[in-house]
Amino acid sequence: MQAIDVLSFGMGDIGSLNRPVMLVGLEGWFDVASAATQAVNAFTSADHAVIVGTIDPDPFYDFTQQRPHVTIDDDIREIVWPTNEFVLQRSGPAPDGGPGQRDVVGLIGVEPHLNWRTYVDAIITVAVAMGCEAVVTVGSAAEALPHTRTPPVTGSTATAGLASRLGLSQPSYQGITGVAGVLNAELEARDIPSISLRVGIPHYLMNAEHPMAVAALVRHLGHVLDVPTSEWMGGDISNQIDSWREVHDEITANDDQLRMYVRMLEAEFDRRAEAQIPTADDLGDQFEEFLKDQRDD
Image 1 (cartoon, rainbow, N blue to C red):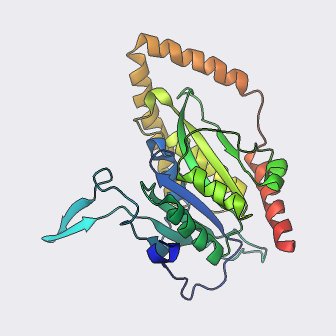
Image 2 (image 1 turned 180 degrees about the vertical axis):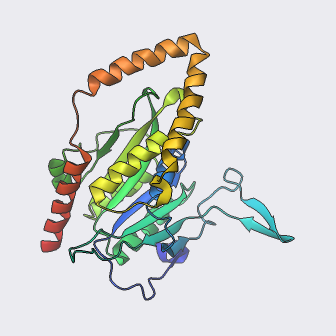
Image 3 (image 1 turned 45 degrees about the vertical axis):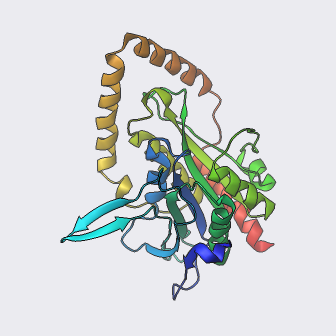
């Protein structure tokens, strides 16, 4: 099976893109509390975003695990299958005649069960066809973090130039991995710049929602990539954060041992926060300079 067999893709008359970058967020193992997919959606949910491609779900899922859904609309029954859609959000020209904010190609989908190599090939096929200068995989993972602190966004890259410029680590993890890990390894093999970013989710509340973590990812990506976000980061995000903070506080307040554990996490978090990684603005400047050098070459 080849990528072309499962990929429905066409750029139509969209014209040339402005320094596009692909963001990938997949439901599943690397999307605790749906923080990663919500963050990618923030960059691809504006009214002018368009779907430019889809991946056929049939070869990739065990439908006894990832079951489709039945919907009824006006007495018409429809089966809704797992979707993997490539969405293009154009940023438009800069008002001052400058380079403008870069365009974003987002893939929001579901981590497949089968045929991972074909799935990864389909992603890379679209990235290359659309001239994406880099691919950024976005994830969220359960970590020993207190819910009372803004979770840090950490990252790694196998691209040596990006690692040195951005002060990111090169991948050192050994063990089981997900599709994001396979994708990043294949991008490295093909000399396509890639970054893996993730945000931590308090492991003792991983079944709840965490808009604070989503907002942290969105802010970080927005600064680093110099791309606009949708209305998701509008006025109601503060209300969402406050509402869920009340829920989280109530859960911990009713458990003496958990409350003591959170205090221990807070002390450790504050101690480690003294050694800060570069700011998002600094990372954004260095990332843009790296990609500019790639274009010059």
